[in-house]
Length: 168
Image (cartoon, rainbow, N blue to C red; front, side):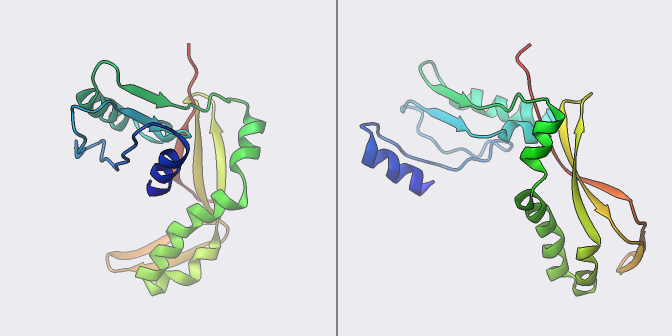
């Protein structure tokens, strides 16, 4: 955020003050006397479920006034081939597998199993959402404090969702 603020101060005449906000819990500290531009780049809202999306929009409504701006970008692409090209890549795979790697740092017994998973994005046409799954490549059992967990080859675990909108 500081880089964005610095860029705007250097390249525009706008007065910019960036802030981070918890839009689910109303933890937003923005002076009410200033005009606001709230910006969502990418498909941030698309990663929220319906309840989270409604809560977020309610919080934005509570802090904005006439003359303020809400700027959102939406990924409206619903073509499965284009979505596969955009999301089925090493960056997304690494990002999601880092969740397992982090868990392996917490529980050393799990580290050996991290590489037993791959990431598979799948287009859910009915929900207009791209779902991300961890897919097990091998069958294994894993000992936890609560008991054994058996994972079967081919078993899928949904770990993320990116909704795609249209303007109908």
